[in-house]
Length: 144
Image 1 (cartoon, rainbow, N blue to C red):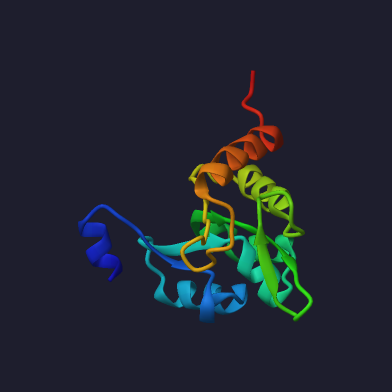
Image 2 (tube, rainbow, N blue to C red; image 1 turned 30 degrees about the vertical axis):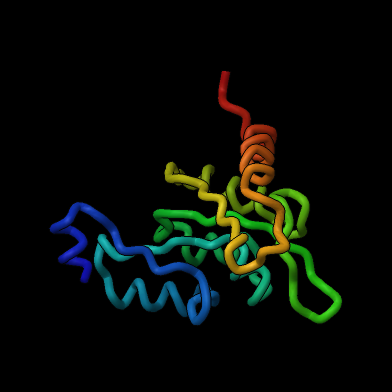
């Protein structure tokens, strides 16, 4: 599949989601595939929330494979799960994660993943997207 991706000028990215939230497991897969057109989409939420991985550990394990990022935030709930909140209002260390990526040379997109379709109780995108932009600009102001 990596060769086909190369032919189309693209890269396949396996997301840190579902069975792939453990960064060591995903790194082993990507290393074994050993193809420059098969990389990682680091969903910043899942290794931290579901596996308890520190940003430093996930970055050390997957940072050099990361070609795309999903950014979302959450807080633990009373039932032992979590609920999504606006970026910066939860306890996922997003700012630390993004800083690690930027300091390591990442120059891709920081895509807000807002799962309103699956969680209809979440605020509307018209509310969330401007807040996301404000948060990112406050955390990472453009150089003068």
